[in-house]
Length: 71
Image 1 (cartoon, rainbow, N blue to C red):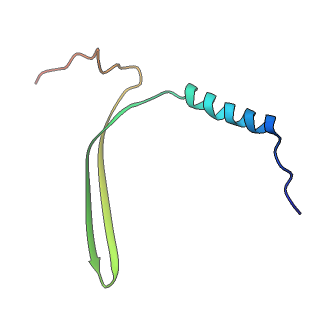
Image 2 (cartoon, rainbow, N blue to C red):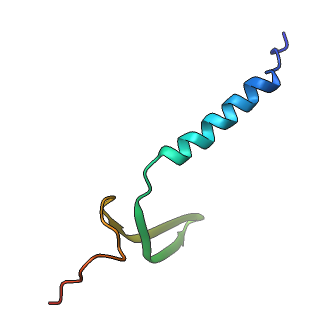
Image 3 (tube, one colour):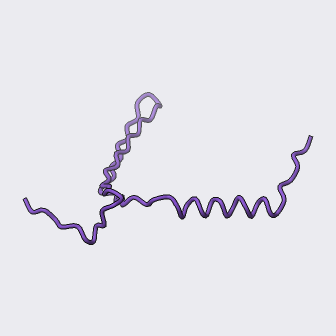
């Protein structure tokens, strides 16, 4: 049995919903600091480990207006 096709208006409504969801979702200030990959192979089995270091600021903090604390 064939699935009934979605109407054009249904497709446009779903598309608009995806766009609005993306616009309403809060953006986090995340920056990748470093990425390292280690790889080893033994007996035909490959082990790959990737480490990603990121810095994430709170959502209510603007990085351009933040006072930097000197140590």
